[in-house]
Length: 390
Image 1: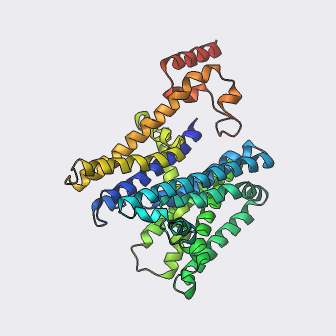
Image 2: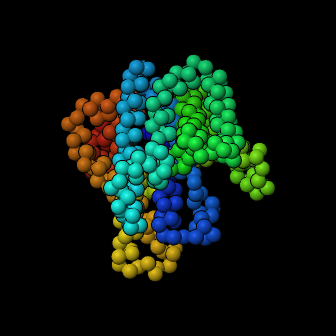
Image 3: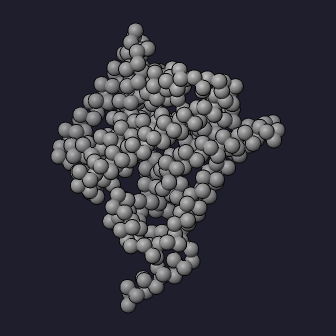
């Protein structure tokens, strides 16, 4: 199923870019190095486009699969799961980081834990999950608005994002810059991901996801327009900095980056590059688990390199070991998880195999799982196709 694989590949590409930035940081690569250049792998794209992609998945999957009460219930449940993952993963990795820096005593104080809410304690990248959870929480309502009044909703989202960006620029240089509401909603959020602008990006993703079903031509024109706007935003960085250009980049950057990543994922899903696309798609399928696992694996690899005395490795080799090792380890873990469930497939009823809140429900079949299935499953699928032709 091309569309579902495209979504998985898109998640996998964002995961690879996120792991790339993390590996650059752990390897101590200076920002002047060519590995930080955009022609290698664009840095900062993953977190910006991640929330838009989450919104797109919400709009595309839930706008046709469920009625509103059921949709609200499922999205609230997923929002609670994402929030739980955010707090647990952030507390764990922040505590480990403090211990590695020799500040482990801080983690035993209530002030350190309370500092996560007061923004006095540094957040990890897990903070990007807060806007995602809030977009999930509001997803059902936004889908209804987009369905009833698509253009009015789009105008409200754009104007809301523009207002948030303008207020952020003005308040960042005012006496209110250090107040908690301004820092939380407009400037920092948890870990540098301000809540309101990121939520607006997620709502834009929902709008695109809903329109994918309602008007394919409109959706395609919007994606192409966003790609053009992102190209213009990129070229604008060559000009002297000004408030107008800064505001333009702040408003189109995230959705434009998502459009380019989605375009690349669409190409990969249609090219005969199965050995490349299947690992990327599998990692993207287990996106939240991959997000958690890659941080553990990369930290373990970094500690292993330091303990074995390999810190004198060339910086490029150090980075490549962290990045590629993490990608391969995450892929192997996803294969294990996938194949752990496969032997039960022939015995399960279709509703159990593809539950109602799974986006593959309407179109999936055992043939979709062929690339990950054992040889017996290939024989079953071929036999069914043969019988269908008969």
